[in-house]
Length: 136
Image 1 (cartoon, rainbow, N blue to C red):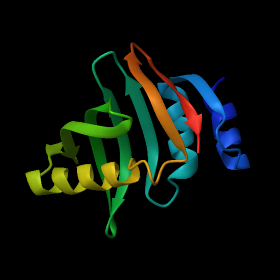
Image 2: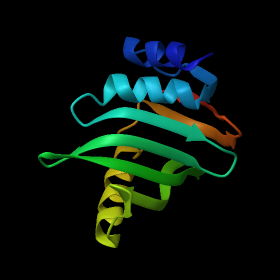
Image 3: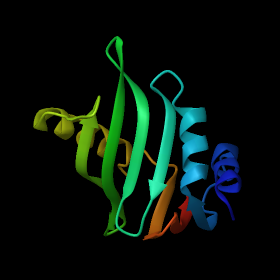
Image 4: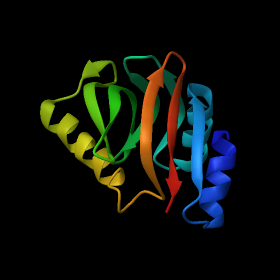
């Protein structure tokens, strides 16, 4: 299964369907650019075996800022969270409170009650993420 098939499955509302997907950074970039309209543009996602790097033009209040986020998705006891290693805005490190706020906002969206899937496996590889689970 690829990301487009998984998104179609989720959008169709089918519950309890197992999935095993390999998602490349380019696929995540396209999905983010399609789904984050109004919040961010020019989203790019690079995946290494150690981290995920997200670049974008993000709309913050009434300004557009260059955003560079580095971190790692972690699956622990069935719960997905994103650990931010660094956050830069307009090529400068963001203040700690801002990194914390963004981390909290991301992790609220990753709350199992908010996600349309449950994960049983998540592994970073060079260039892609492998994920398995089932739709909710």
